[in-house]
Image 1: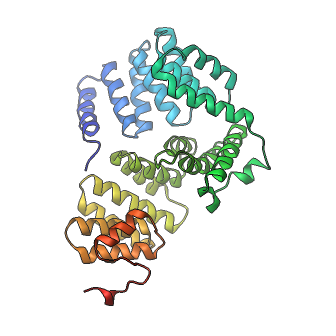
Image 2: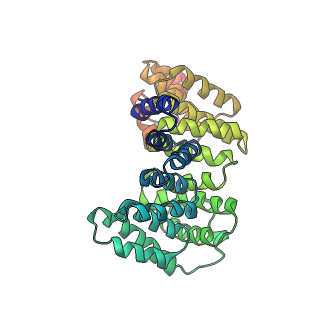
Image 3: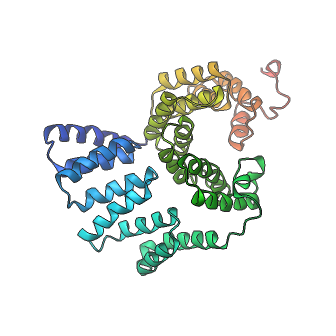
Length: 348
């Protein structure tokens, strides 16, 4: 299913609109918003720069550009735009809340708390403010048990919630202390995994991964990670864009390249582009066999009624190391109750 139909249609319409009315600040603002919503942050920035050039007093344009900048990890630049919004519209609580959250990202905790206190009376902000205050309290209460950088590492133990909590705190401190954008991106990438474990939500990693890609925009692996986060959020169009970008930049290993191709294949399948999905999945396996590609080929075969092919692809996925409950259930649906002992001779 194409989850982004409305935005894709709007993008095409707005591109035509700015071509016909190139001096319309409103059209450029709406185009920038739509590009940002689809994950085209750099293109959105260009559109919003043009909108603000045409109408420097546009609170909407400045607000949208601030949002795009923070998604690119430019929190100081975002807050400069929000400051301009406040001078135009002092009641812009949404921008003020984003401003305060950016202060936390910048480590300016006292300033952030002051803004949260001023916004505390708005019920719509209550959950976000409470979450941000808990984060500030964690940052202040953090007592290192060793070198933060050595703790902020990806290992199997991170799947344990207590370990994930420790990693989250260490990565947060390491991120705030780092003066190098690539290192900051590394710390956020590890923290993103800890967040998934802590929050028990597969899309809890999105914010950290988006900022990591913004901070280290020449690293293809960052965009592949972001693509998978977007798939979890059911934004397949944006995910495909990020997988495209990852593959254009290049990734650090054959496996990473294969997995990015498999991610793009899944995005194409979600967007009802079967031939592109199958081609990407097969190319992915040619680069290096991986469970993301074989699982998808199994899903496609099953949906098309080829239970034997689905079974074979899902068995291959299991043998590549996948143990998800969803895969086990899928195997049971094609008659494989015990994949450990199953072999082709057992098929009837």
